[in-house]
Amino acid sequence: MGKDVLYIADRHKKEFTYPIHNHEVYELNFVEHAKGVRRIVGDSNEVIDEYDLVLITSPDLEHVWEQNDCQSDDIHEITIQFDLDLSDSGMFGRNPFNSMKRMMSEARKGLAFPMDAIMKVYNMLITLSQEKDGFYAFRQFLTILYELSRCDGARTLATSSFAKVEVESDSRRVLKVKNYISKHYMDEVRLGTLADIAGMSPSAFSRFFKLHTGRNLSDYIIDMRLGYATRKLVDSTHSIAEIGFSCGFNNLSNFNRIFKKKKGCSPSEFRENYHKTRIIV
Image 1 (cartoon, rainbow, N blue to C red):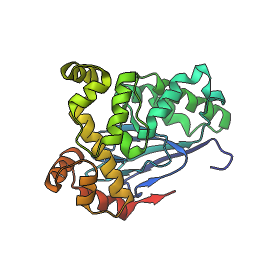
Image 2: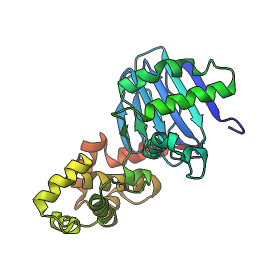
Image 3: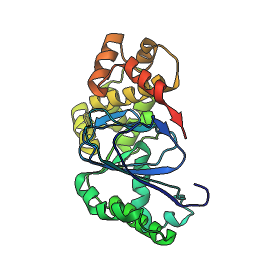
C-alpha cells in the first residue's frame, strides 16, 4: 500500500479463483450476486447468499471466497484494504471512535454483517471507488466503518483458539472460567470444577454461562477444542489422531464425527484444502 491509506478494488467477474491467503493489512470485503459461493475465514466455512460483507483485522487469519456452487455470471466484489493505528495513544484511541475500535477488535476473528447493516452502507460502498479525491474517499470509508460499528447482529466467524485471540468477557467470573478452559482444554473439563471457580452451584453456573455467552458450556468447550485442532491441522505435521487426542477428544472416531458435524468436512479434508491453496501476501 505504500503511503496510501486505502486500496480499493471494485470489480465484476464470473468466478473466484484466488487461493486462501492472509496479509498484514486490514480488509473489508463486499460481495453481491454471489449466492452459492463458499466463504472460508479461519476455521469458519459457510456458503453465502446474494450479499456478503466481512471485516478481517488479523494478519494471521486465513480467508478466501471460493466459487463452489455459484452460477452467477456477474459477481460484484469490492475489496478495501486499509491500515489504521488503533493504539490507545493514536487518534482512533479517542472517545468518538470507541465503537469502531471495539468492532476492529472483534474482527480479528472475522466479522460478518447482517443484511440490514449491509443495506445501510450499500450506496457508500458502491460509490467509494468513484471518489477520486483521497481525503473524501477516506472520509466516506470512515463513515462506512462507523455505521457498521453501530449496527446490531454482526457475528464473529473464526473461533478464538484458531485465530489466536485471547478470550474476552464482560463478566469476571466467565473470564476466569474461559481462561481455565483454554489452559485445560486437552483434559477432561468437569462442570463441578468450573462451577467452583465461579463460586456457584453447577446448575446455577450452567444458566449463568449461557446467559453471558449465548452458548451451552459443552458447545463452548467443543468449539474451543476444535479451534485448537484446526490450527494444529494447518500449522503442524502431526497425525490426525495425535491432534485429536492432544485437543481433548478421547478417540479418533469421536474426533472425526464431531469435526465433520461442525465443519462440514473431515479433519484430513480440512488440512488438504488449506495446504494446497494457502499463500501469504
